[in-house]
Image (cartoon, rainbow, N blue to C red):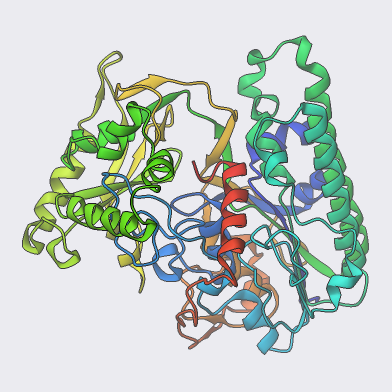
Length: 547
């Protein structure tokens, strides 16, 4: 029996898009895995975003334990957060997090410590590269132009034509279809060749390779991939549609070559960090929403000045001739701190349809007495649940609850006090185009993240079934460790997916646990320079994670 595991990650993949392509015969390699394996929908994290989701894949932990809730810090009271004293009821994104912010035990750490040879290629939340018993090539959080993206460092020289991702300009939905698709094909092929070359180098025990092109394509071209949207595009778009579908055929070719090289020496796991669905065409005005749930209703001074054409940039430009820059910034800081004292809470956009509310308790320097926080939290939840679209008479919010009902673990306090989910017909807008609570808007992207991703495992001892019950992304690391013949650390929230194995296999190979406990990160995700952090933030804006 082989204890080697090949993991193929398809960022954002969903059976909604893949099943029709399989049925049309466009993805024969993937079809062969489905025919001989166990597959299921895979429930992502809250929110279903790359950074927290792949962090949960790596650690087997929910965000309440590993502490990653977005690509950036979301705590508006943190010393590291941007705009923490801003005169607003919205929380602005803080510094971008990276792999340094992720505690352990991590999948490759456990496998390496057991003497397993490991490879990780393009797995999000791996920059900067970590020590590993094998090879590591980091992810989209690698600063553009950096040569520090591999373990060992000399591996970078072998990857001279490798590209980690499309550039921000190529992903911001303004490039032409031809330009975007041409570059997506080039980057995919470069990644596929590098993965194949490293896979064939020697006998690895654990080989993880993530293809992110599926996510990039689905953000822009979801209407061509969801059968329910076939009515939305005419024959004039058929050339673009065929090119989109051919990119999935191209991806399947790379998967097929990997499977051929793996043969029966490896069990194969196919996984995505989240799924996909249609982007919402109705937007929720977040400043108005803040007033509706009791956080406040006074528009920020900066917004009132902006309506007069006086932005902060212009103010500094003209007032800078009269007042020293240091005094201007000190005055701004004092004004922001005074304004913050009156802010009862802040809204944060965790994802397009998922929001959070931070309550500004007295212990944080705010106006809400600590003993009143539970009551104020419950009133916010009640107001969220009672929000109605007056035009249709239907609720806007599908669910709202305290963070403790969503997350568990040592870092739950890093999450907003309240988590809420919009009906999937709506999306949150922190920079509203209109003054109404609800308004229509044509998003630049047709697809957005949804919770249900994919999971598939094939090989010896695997049950050939298709359960309807979704599994959790936290279950991936324990299951992969079990496939490697290793015990599962007690610090992992996930479980070994027992239903994926044949009963005889489980009897012969019972699940074992180790006493390894959760370890906090040694560093908080610091970057080598502010320029690096700014470059990565710009990359996230290009994909739409930051507005």
